[in-house]
Length: 238
Image (cartoon, rainbow, N blue to C red; front, side):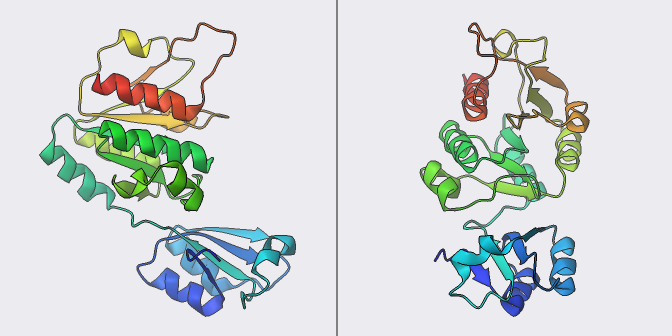
């Protein structure tokens, strides 16, 4: 069994109270609703899902008591400290924010590219993002352990902080009027990549300093988000 999974009411409560990075909690839909766990999870901004009993079958050999917590295999960096520290080290820093990308392989691929090109930090939202698991680690080819990854309650707050530090915040959008390859973007800069299905959420999109599109000549009107992110990152370091 995956060592990043823990079971049972008390162990999960202790994980939430301690300094363990809990990614997500499953509660058995047909079981008891554990108010203490729900309250602790809410306080720690950890997502709780009520799932049916078939999902718990693979844990039947464990005394799960209707509670399973999935832990992150990495330690997350403090967002504000990381941004400040990186800016002090490099005035031309590049940061990457991932908004609502739920495919673990896409995120893993993006992290691999980000580490290769020297992105200073990757910022993820507490909720609505792919859970960091073994598949993501494998897809990243281990790069996930070599780049600072920060989790924030809301990406909007992260954008406010970045702008307050004179970091230009741009986004990838198919509806943008400017082409990435025909624009000169000054650093430090933060790139926001949205989900393949919905793109960058509207409220966040309005906060960006600028949006850019990638030129597409063929009939297919969109690129995989990991490919698009790679093109944005490499263009900024070119």
